[in-house]
Image 1 (spheres, rainbow, N blue to C red):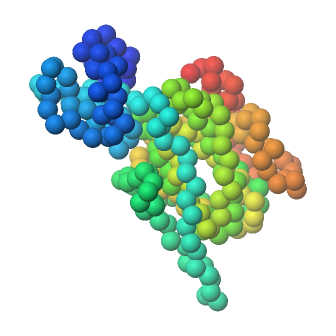
Image 2 (cartoon, rainbow, N blue to C red; image 1 turned 90 degrees about the vertical axis):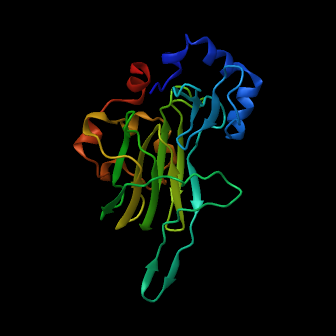
Length: 247
């Protein structure tokens, strides 16, 4: 199955179809055309944001959706219940009906990160295609500053970093194509996150947190780098500048 414009850019039928108003409208509506007709393919968008060409002879081409409908990180409010027994924190898989179905994924693994120390930093981590991961991040107890860098070359925000304060009242949806990390801002912070793709050691990568210039500016005033808890792996990794040049 072809999965990039580069692989099919010389196919005139595909290119003409892609540039036509009818084709673009079909993508935006995310609906399948009723008939092939005039040699054009059926058109629809799959759950991972690929524009799919389904040809009458059975061929399937896929092109990444290159406009402002690309998925972005979303902070979702998630009510927590507190009583004298402690905290009950559900991990919500449903969003408001007025919003896109961000959470309509096949989550295959749940990870738990237990962080006794304040200023524990993990990241920024990513996996390359075809093992890129969507993540749904939930703080069970404590709080974190979560940061994500857009590493999708086709994105208008390529190389830019977004920040989110995540507490038990919220969960963070992180699409594929982002390097993800967080730092704890309380002791005994427990983080759970779901992923929709398996771990692949040969496809993983890390970006040095301190090379993302504005991360420190987003941390609380009392933050002191001397007290940070971080793995050797996350210290000895490439800078954001190096990553952007290499890609």
